[in-house]
Length: 377
Image (spheres, rainbow, N blue to C red):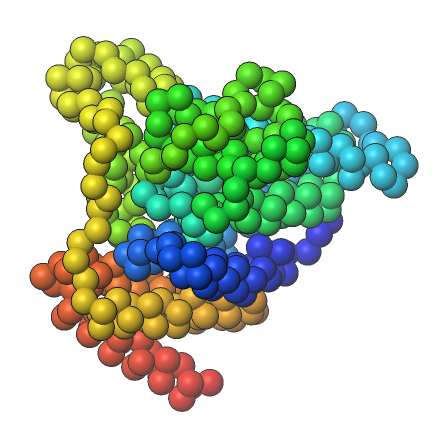
């Protein structure tokens, strides 16, 4: 059984930010604005929230549940290489169907929508993840345990698949036709993130693009992509991003004309629009000519937010590295400090009236808390 030290994803965090720096530099060389402060900070904030939940709960729980299922496996795979081969194919197929159904079932879309809310497309978007993704993916991966894929190959292959998907979140790499016959690419994944009508719900594979051809969801990039969701979030708050779609889904289910209609709504496609729902919630516009959510922000505020975000990310990375060795109160205090920043810094960039006083309070409380811990330590 693999140990629960820092995950490959946590160890790769510095490489993620190095890649984003390189992408920003390359974009400037081309005269292209790759990142907008508010949108990029929201992306990173969602990633911070997801990793904090992983630290507190999900990584350990997923491994424990998978290992328990593996103890009841139907058989043990022979030879040293077969478990790894089965993990590569099994993780890819399980991911494909989780990903595809996450676009076709409201209860799964509630988690996955977070990854699609950005109206930009860059490496920061790869970090934009839901805190609930682990809960929706686990049922798709458990059959691998029952079929005899051991925990170690499963964890390693899943981590490598996740790492592979980082580089495909960029507009700076053109289509690669020969490569795309077999593997996922930035152009194919741009299509997946686009809201152009012909691109919706296409290209669900993680690493191997031939799965989309096999299951009829392949679509090449033929025209410029427009990114985001058909119902835009219009917020840079990563905490609101995590809950907005779920809140709206439960609110609409509570207002359904019957329990049967409420139940159907939970399991229906996000595109399902019965008359009673259309009356409660107007259908979002289908046009692609819409302005991105981009409240004006001064250069000074943007620089301050970026510096503070760097401090939060550094602290989160430290928690991921050593957090499980820290006393629970210290770990919890670190999580609270990070979550407070997820609330105040986006509000500062958006120009919320209460943001400056809330940010000042957060900084003072964080400094006092760190000083108290250092003194007691």
